Length: 381
Length: 186
Image 1 (tube, chains in turn purple, yellow):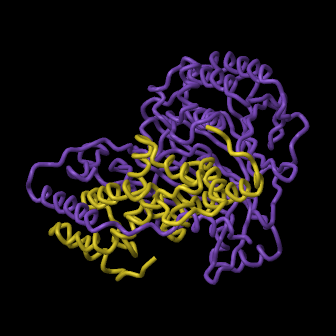
Image 2 (tube, rainbow over the protein chains, first blue to last red):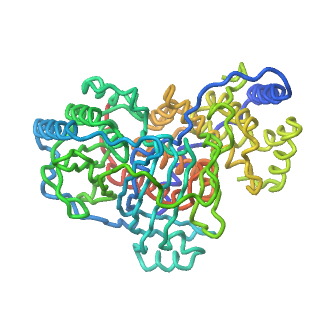
Image 3 (tube, rainbow over the protein chains, first blue to last red):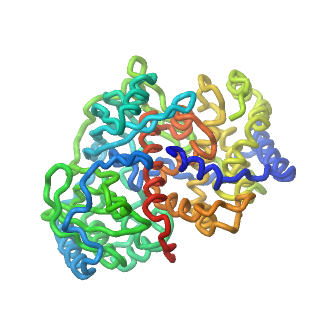
């Protein structure tokens, strides 16, 4: 059944026991304390909370296709002939070393004050729509994503959805009959973000070692982005740190050399991405999925990635291609609403642009101290 | 999700701008739901602290509540999500959940013994991007609508749809692809 995954999720969640009376009392005391503090007592102590939304590991890349269980929607070809999970690790290590040399030789391209890092990507993305009464439809469509992100986290993300394709006539009928086409109508959405709302760096790059062995150890233990420790996750994180970021050449080189030592990484040789560009492919199989990263041979830049489900002979379940990032001095379009004040992570809110329902301005409330959030009252932590 | 006096949340929060104690109404209405979601995510013990912190943060930031919102719950769950992610980065709360699912019998946040597929579900969740996982779990475990998730996470509606689609595709693909795969030792 189409919703087995959700049913399983709900069954696994169970029904937690309600909070104990003591817990509720403690929480109420903490709130009362906060209310009292605001009434004129001393300000509570504060802790810094990360102000920028966490960037996706794979999520902020444009798109990703969807393959649905009951109606497996094959979006790409089956495993290409060059990819073999038994390829020697030494070949992968040699490839990654060449990429590291290429990456280290590239100029630094970091946006300065008032500048933006521009990236563009194309992919196939999917949309699931559940309507009142339980009707359900799935659509797949091409999506072109562009982002302009400043070093302070301000910027613009523009996504253009193409005409949808449906996995069956039934899906087409349901989606087309739904309000707003079940969310699959072609068009462009724009999201302007105040400072702090976006981020070029998925993690603070300054804190990452450029010694490959130390970096690999950090990746393997899940201490870079969090997540489960292990080579599969570490390989994904290598992509995260390269995708739509301003990672310096030295860090990029270290990432390649760190990836070279991950158990299970293998070379795909020369492969062609979904835009017909030839690159160097590397892959790692984990949890039934092959994650592929494809690099430009002369610059070491990440040019594409895709995931392949290894069951049923293997089929591409999502792919994304990237254009090389570059620094730009201006946004292509100003925000129609004020962006000030700075975005505060927990309370950022989207404001719809009047007359443009797809567009959003992401702003926050004034932070008394630049995005610092209050520490819960003593005794509640 | 329980129906609330839709005007009530906005009215209570607006009133609390001058009289902070009026915010207690929001606590009384939503503490249980926020705690329930956090217990599913992080276990009952951590849910106590996180739910408490959620309302303190919400009170401090109540001026940012959109008074056109129909319920304060998505806003509160957005704050809870951010606190959860922050705590997760600090001490791997999320891993606790995933490990419990992977380990199947063993409960933790779960009152009942998990179904046999729980281990593979845990692996599938572990492989998800954080933003996709947040959307999926707000949808499946907090019963928020697409619009409410968009409000909670401050992302466009289309982003919610695409993240949910991708998350579900990943989970389905994983559940299909490795029905009897040996568990990876970490």
